Length: 126
Image 1 (cartoon, rainbow, N blue to C red):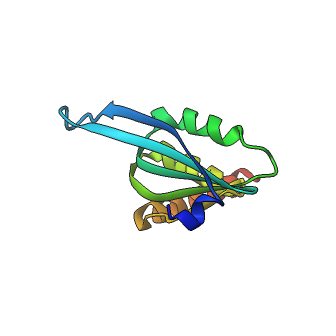
Image 2: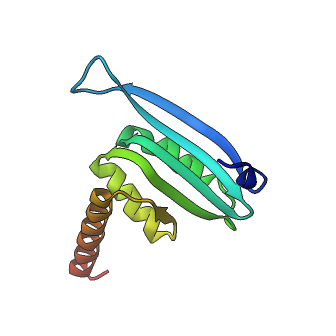
Image 3: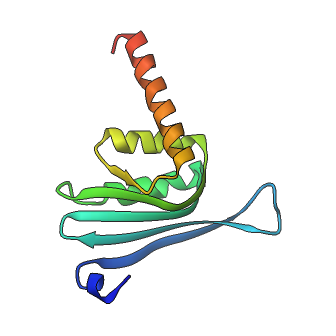
């Protein structure tokens, strides 16, 4: 981050989670959450793999923010997600959170899941 931005943003690394990949036993998978704040705008920059096992931690961090803060999830450095993560992101958008720098394959998957969720609700008469 440039010196010009450092006086406006408070930057803090929230957590780094390492877990072995199932298909590559000698490598590690990383999920990192970095929080920055500018007034009432809070950005969580996510990187690595977002898997179901880490969603609880992320949900707690988002829930701990004040209600008057605008929340943004920056997905620029996200490399891989699972279906549970997509469902989580769909719900985040439905709650008014903004997703930025979303990789195209993730955006497409989110849109498919959101459409499917809408169709299911319509069928149930909700």
